Length: 99
Image (spheres, rainbow, N blue to C red):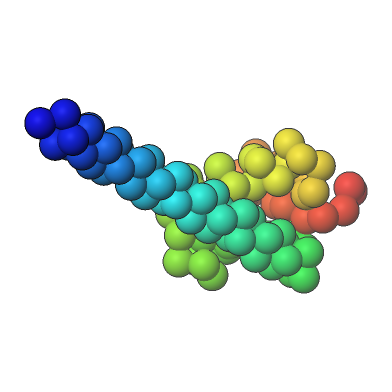
């Protein structure tokens, strides 16, 4: 009887371990995806210089808000620069160089 309780207890733990492993794997994949898209967007900005959010979003078929979030992280890390336009009717541009 004790053996069957122990087995059930282990089975529950095993299921929980599998769930945790799945969550960790999913988190890793999401982090890996974000890292990769960040690298690809950085390369695009580096190559094309002075690009807008809408140009990047259109090229990668992403939502502008998603692109803005990635660009914000790249700005925070010092990898790219945001250039505010002199004329408020223009959009901000992004490049890898300080202007």
